[in-house]
Length: 115
Image: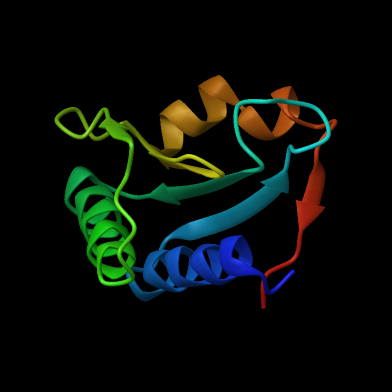
């Protein structure tokens, strides 16, 4: 999977991990949706941590010349959605993640192991 999209996902994954994201999941939705190829989903324990994750992802990907098409939910920090076209990153607080349960909704997608 180490094409350009895979490389950018790895950068985003490492940024989330560096900011101590919990339960980082990557789902390949390319065969079940035209929205994107991959969803990356992670949780933070408070708004400051959630903002720090989003900020570091944005900084690291901008360093690679990649800018988000849109970022939504930053102010509330209970669900930040970062649209990088092929990759859509979802950063949740725990309550919102359980409520929206994207892993269940997109269970037709294929789980990608990042290590």
